[in-house]
Image: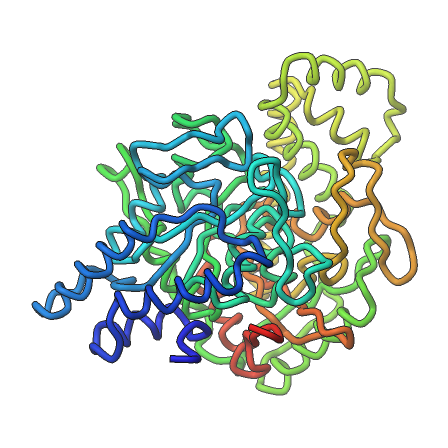
Length: 485
């Protein structure tokens, strides 16, 4: 039983179906680990073990009858606290929702339960999932299992910390600013940001509970300890929802390649003005080289037909427009006045936040057209390449910094201070263009901190980016447990 907690969810599901382990036995194994390790980690913040045990017993009874409930039959699972779970406190990390107990599941959670998963708890998030670190006034701070003095990232920080420590079988994240890929990179697990719109966000906080619309850019996607887990969970949660289900079905294309042989790969690790940690860059180049040695055709110079800075500016303006819609009126009024006072040449995070949060609808339409043109350039680029390899983040896991002024926070990369919000930069290209992007672990720094690589693919090429993550997993070893767990 000692290694059950680090096996993939896909393998756990197979073991339950083959009656090699009972769903209740498996759940109790994970609960015992939660009770032992979670107090110091603070990844799992709300639980319902009684209801989970009842679900596990029902899963075991179904197996005994020869009835398989679905692809996740019997897999113990937690849910990021941004997603509503019926009957379980779902706060989004916001004190205003501290006592919110929804009556219905978020759409992806409903699909997860229908597929037979045993949901036993919620994992921590920052306030309204709005930070690259995970802490809030309800549940406190989540630590990185590789180094408790550092954060696991955000906003899916509790989810990845629980996965890395072997406290849950599978997780789901959400991503509007890197919140699936960045935490996966920082904790050494796998994460997938799907193509925009293929997974419903109804029941996600934010927006406010009861919202029926979804924000621009934002997606929900799988987190796991293997590429196979990403593919498994994406197959469960993706698809038409609500009234759309009457008229269309999602049919994602098969992976463009089954092996590295002949895979066409663009390598985008170096970008002027956006340097990444030099040791981390070495691990990314090693991963690219491993694919090349296995038969992939690499190009280290070719780029899409636009500049990184151009893409970044459009992304950040649209991101702050989406986030700013939820700000109080007085904050939006302040940012509108600030935007008027700034030099038009000012492209700082402060300026882009002010302009984006006060964007008029007419200006949004202009930016959306610029995005559409970039998307067309990406589509042309992916006629010649299957995937792009890129960094997930500027650096490995960094120390906790809870100072309230985001714009005043700093990160140190290669001995140079960088703006904290530069954590958004490498998340932006895939988000802006609605592209799928997968984060896969590629090794550890000398300090023992995990590093992930970002695999970006063509629109609706989700199976391709996940397949390439699987290739890298087989070449480099994939997930490894943090010491002490």
